[in-house]
Length: 160
Image: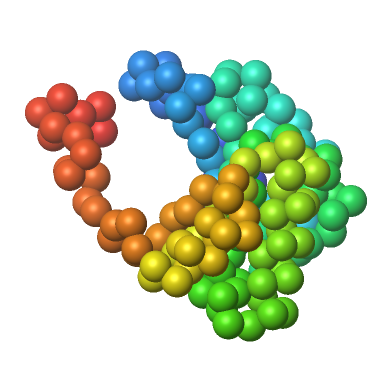
């Protein structure tokens, strides 16, 4: 999320929420592990400011980036997403299944919801349901990405 590094990011989000009247508690911002690589204190300050508005944070593609657990545990994360590359191979490759297990445990330890990305087949869904029943599942098995027009009425959109 390159915009997160901008000095006025928090104010921009706050202004957009106010202008759109969108409830902040429904806004989850996805970040990758690399967002904390540069200036951790600034990142934490911005995240806390946005959390005070009601926003939550999801750590996307967990395990593929800058995985310093001592840094990550300081971030106010509500959700951890297991990268699809691990999920896709987990049913047939023990190493990937162990990585999925590790990420689930880390998410649980952080008190975060855990989402498995890349669930593309019944085999993936069954594997995760059997081994990690509390993990939320996301992927093409459930539906393909859709244009925003599918979900909103363009006549009533605040995006116009």
